[in-house]
Amino acid sequence: MASELRYGIIGAGSMGREHIENIKIMGGATITAISDPWEESRSAALAMVPGAKTFSNHLELLESGLVDAVVIASPNDTHAAVLKDALVTNIAVFVEKPLATTIEDCKQILEWNRARTALTWMGLEYRFMPPVAEVIARAHAGEVGKVQQVSIREHREPFYPKVGNWNRFSERTGGTLVEKCCHYFNLMDLIMGERPTQVFASGGQNVNHKDEIYDGRQADMLDSAFVIVDYASGARAMLDLCMFGEGSFDKEIVTIVGDQGKLESFLPSQTVRYSRRADWGRKTGWDAKAGTGRGSEIKQVIDLSIKYYGHHYGASYIEHLKFRDALLNSTPAEVTLEDGITSVATGLAAHLSIKENRLVALKEILG
Image (cartoon, rainbow, N blue to C red):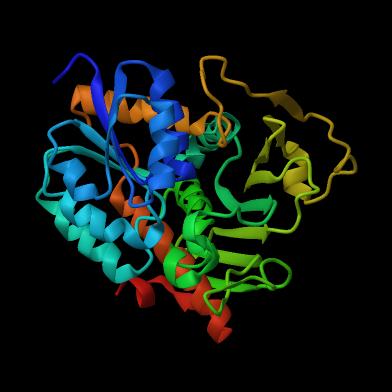
């Protein structure tokens, strides 16, 4: 292997170019090849890494001999086709979320990966955002006792425009709760340390994209939802998503509540809050000082080793370092395709729950 790892980028849209920024700055790596069927995207990526070889087809890149690793950042509904070709090679693979848009494609991808010895990494970077990583680590260390509830709130702006408007349609994205929220369902599973059993959701397309028509078709991405996720242990989690709530300062809040305390992560303020229940308060169920914040810890969590913060508070940079080190040290992926399929299944279950107004068991989706 060369002294610098050679990377190929498959899909040079906005997320592909975000990966280029991270790889360029982390060191020990160079981008040697770019593939995208859109000339505008190829040109924009090539301007970032002059000298890279460009291709209009991902198979040409995979067969070029120019790369040790590829990052797959093409539209969601193309992941299965690209992975079918990538997973038969000895090239290390990093695939962006979501793994695929249907559970059938996810299962097929797992089969293709089964006989593989090269590294395959599922891109779910939210767990690496420094404040989020801290509250997860502290919860796993027992600081809140037994975790009973997790809630995640994202109040943000609408979906950005993308090439060909592919992210305006559920059939191409898998739906908002797959495309946008698989990250959050993966965080829930990681915090709980178990897989979900059932989902109930309510949501709709209430404000955004309702006046957008492309090739005679109405954009159909929902923009708001509440999703409740149950676990076999009796613990539960909830997602509160609003994509017309961009006025919030802290637009992403993760809350972990156990029987002994509570941890919260706030972004973009990069703040962590921690409080522990008083012993007598736990016994009596009442604390006269509840709500005063007495005994709470508040701090900012900023990782000064991050060289590029990008769109995800440095999480993509950290994940790329971990992917690179796993490749160089021949260690297993920290984030697996199994993580990817469960996060997709939860999102699909939530969409089915909204459509049919009922609770959906994960086994209905996973089989």
